[in-house]
Image (cartoon, rainbow, N blue to C red):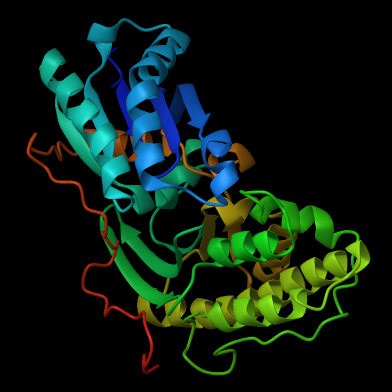
Length: 357
């Protein structure tokens, strides 16, 4: 029996320092041996958001301990590691540089291959960690920094069908939470508050709802929330606004996802219609439930990563590393950090005032 590859994954693109060891079984299914994530919430809480310099400093202080913990928990010998995969982008360059440099040095010290990983590709492949997932599939990537519909044809083959033209959905959740007086990171708390509120209390705007294909926009919605919060005086009004905000986002995603289904089927003509939802916002249960129901209506198979793997983690980075290792797709040790690194590098940049849809 041949030795199964052991991959060390390292993630430091924003405010989580993470390391993971994965391998695979005889059927070729991945096995997560360890997955350590160290959050920096307490570091950034008083500032209401991530401070890049503080995040980088925290990564430097913790990364060797986090990697050692991942190795210890996996119960492997360090010399058994077959390759090191590190996030190279997109993200905050001062943060990316920490994990990238550590990964390169670690690989060089073991004389093992180094693999530079696109953080977004990690999210795209994260459902492979707990379910059988074959190409092609439609991907909805929803996180604090990204909101995109992508056609995934194969490893490294992505076609963007739609994207946000301004703010990411996760950013809209976090900013709404901040305006409601919820401590950073407040996005996940919106779902908690929404359960206590009336989702029909406030009629909020749905930017580019009836145009722009499956492109998205959340800036106008955030502005409306800002204006309403100036008039709010009671906790119940906060609950109502949280519920109305979440309902509006769900309605936007429902319509735009239906359009994305049509675009995907035109482009790919898949034998089996699979819809993958990944990224931090994929942990929102109300959004999950709506998308699952929509998949039933449209005859799609919904696929989500486990809740604990929706946010940033190193297991998904190691997953990409495992796929690339088997294809012998290795990178040089001078591979640069890429703060901007789209999955579809041929797609037109669609952000900023005056974007034509």
